[in-house]
Image 1 (spheres, rainbow, N blue to C red):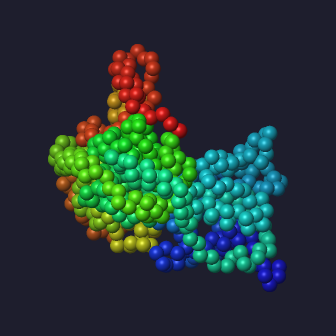
Image 2: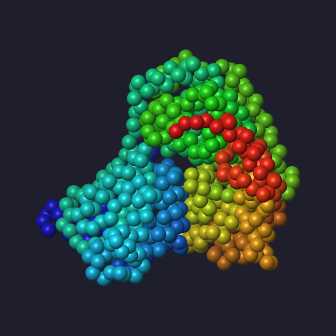
Image 3: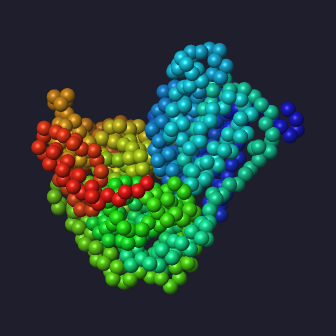
Amino acid sequence: MTNSTIRLTTAQAIIRYLANQYISVDGQEMRLCGGGFGIFGHGNVTCLGEALYDARGALPLYRGQNEQSMGFAAAGYAKQWLRQRFMFCTASAGPGTSNLLTSAALAHANRLPMLLLCGDTYVTRLPDPVLQQLEHFGNPSLGVNDAFKAVTRFWDRITHPAQVLQSLPAALATMLDPADCGPAFIGLPQDVQGWTFDYPKSFFAKRVHRIRRQAPDRADIADAAALLKTAKRPMIIAGGGVQYARAVAELTDFAVAHNIPVVETIAGRANLHQDHPLNIGPVGVTGSDSANAIAEKADMILAVGTRLQDFTTGSWTAFAKDARIIGLNVGRHDAMKHLSLPVVGDAKLGLAALGDALAGYAAPMDWSDFAQTERAKWVAYTDDITTVGNGPNSYAQAIRTVNDLCDPRDRVVAAAGGLPAEVTAHWQTKDIGTVDVEFGFSCMGYEIAGGWGARIAQHEREPDNDTIVFTGDGSYLMLNSDIYSSVLTQRKLIILVLDNGGFAVINKLQNNTGNTSFNNLIADSPTVPAPFAVDFEAHAASLGAHAETVSNATELGAAFKRAKAADKTSVIVMQVDPYDGWTTQGHAWWEVGTPHITDNPKVAEKHAEIEATRAKQRKGI
């Protein structure tokens, strides 16, 4: 060791490096890594745990209850910070680490930064086979951690302490890259974690990062502008990338300047305020009649910051076959989908440049008038279906009740099941960037854990606002332990548990394809001789939350007010009907595999009906 070097273990070097990485957000410097979520085992407690203890003031470590939920919390945190900051997750070797696979896949699908620091088996192999090691007889270097190669954007296994000098900056660069953003995995063999190296002190100097903004090519902008100027019925699809680029103002100004209606994807919800006249609603399978009506007629689609997932495109039936698509996206892969004219670049810079090139162009008034007429019809429909007492208890009534009572900057979180469609359809955006509907990986169990992570981030930015979680009984039973986490860490959540007796939305799909209800609702499960209702109130109370059960949406409103006034996590339970009260409008066609032969005439009939609409499907790449 010299004056220019410092001797550290591998684990100490990793943590010291992370603690000295900063980012400037809205003119304020803060640590790039907000801390981490951890469950210790023999694969990470002795060395990484030692390093984290010494850095506990700079990098707070939140004790997890389940490794998968830790990853969901890290994803919720990254979303709340618009990918400007991230959390790490650390788990032990073996099942602790493999529990993070689903979380990594969620982050990968949603393009979210997350650093996974996971235990690994010994590089020396002297004690092999060790506890929890999977042995591959013909490939001794292969292990569980190799499974993360499929679900991460960056993957490395540290086999010598010096590798940290290359691996950590590369991992951070991936997580900060707007196009390649996603989870980074670093495997830490148990012996290597404690090995030492003389690291250059300069490696640990404070560094302030910034997220790169890539300006689009001027020729691409010119081509896109020339094409847009020919449009008689243009439409903008606003995706989640608009928010990550902090381009909401540019999107709004662009739409107004050129009189172009805007529809939102699921990830792009809350790009525009609900009452903006050019906000024509959510598009696609979980969309609105209004957005889908203009999508069918549009001759030009400007897709901004969206990966054009099948729920957005109606499995590519939502748009006219001859409609042209311009893909403005920081990711080349997304910008060029379905033979789009690609404009690869940052949404904020791209919209500004495209706006300048379109000077003097505005869509015909009859087109925007048509869009707004359709929007008015959709608003009237949602007002009707969400009216308390209009039909049995439903998701729609619960959503509108909470929506009317929440503060503008409260954040709503939902995922998987039937709630994403209902929240997407009925949530009235009061302020920008306040909705997180996780439907990229459509992962049941994200809701409460992701809400906890979002609340940690929200507490750092807007401590006076609430994080509101919508979950069904199915997701609750899959993963609920972060109710306890939120109570322990004093990061209050308001959780709405809407109990419809099982997996009701998949039961609906089962019925809509001609099948008999089977193994989705608890009442229809062949191996359940005597169904009974879970006492969610008692369970949530046992985890330390304030909990109560209500009979209808009116009582829900009163309970929600009490939850807003409370100083700790509240869980409100309400039963909803599994069959009635679903949103029936707005659904674009969605491709699902149905049996080509069957003895069931109802299934055969539905198969023929579904296949008959396939003619609308665009063919592309």
